[in-house]
Length: 441
Image (cartoon, rainbow, N blue to C red):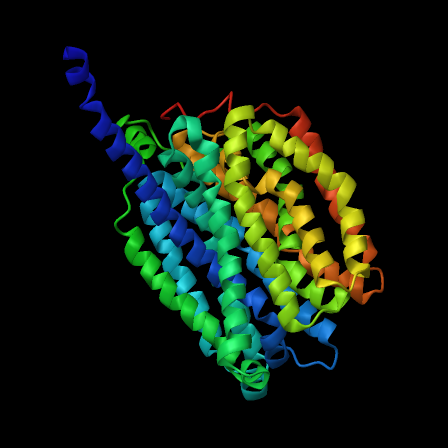
């Protein structure tokens, strides 16, 4: 009887703790989804708005110009990573996440109201570039702060599982943009209306969702790791100066990110254009194929995250590196030659089977490399720098090769970048077993 009495009070405490963690992860994830929806709405609707900003008789040139601006948004992501990483490490994860979503709201609104090239000339693409820079700054900070937040609120035995929801919502943001496109294409607007003005609607929606996410994030709880580090009274250096103390960890982040981010942006943002222009499927069928593959990708994330909690992070990364190096060229070559939407869906989903080995756990791997006092900056800055070089440029590089008549060259480029990351995966320690997350520094 006494044993029952002694242990029973623990159950509500455990329940409340689990409830608090789930609530924090939900609120952090929803905000992350909204930010990535805003960012990816640009890609989902580029086929419709590009002619309004980049006049040309060649649709490939129009899409190349749109892809170039997409890449330009990535150039400023390292700056955003430093700025919001510094805010997150110095003043808290919640503040950083709240400010970043406000900036994303402004970027989305600018795109929604910017006049076309026919109305204001070169000022139109210039304003579009400004909007993408604002969104790039916002997203540069969002990744590091959200990866840190989701990892810190998770219990130690399930960090891989909980942190995988960053990419569930990241992919979910793009999926939401595509679903909005499907509704506009099939239910609410004609093709002519979508081309003329309907492409502005998703950016208005994004701004509204960002305001909702901002309100939600104001009520998020700060992580225990940050509060413990704050109470410890350790001297806090400037974020970049502090980051210089961890050159090995920074190099690992760069190395493990390069191949993964190139693969991710190939099989997400570039696939919309690739399936439409290279495979030759119609607009609506292309949207269905991409939406289906993204749903499949979202399902894989928590499954792989859970597996990493059992077997470690390193085996998952090595799996991605080996499969990506060997299978990227065959998958893209076969995809380019098919005319079947079902075959296209299966091939893209097949690529996600190994790409998810990176996407599902890369956030927790990076967070486990750094102590609390520099974690958000350590995750964000080298990641954003690498993404700006290898990730954001992937669609533009692919379209450049296509314009030059050598589209297949991109397949080998992607395979080579993945192989470079594989070299890092095989030599790094497994962060699950050598994590810095237990130190409140």
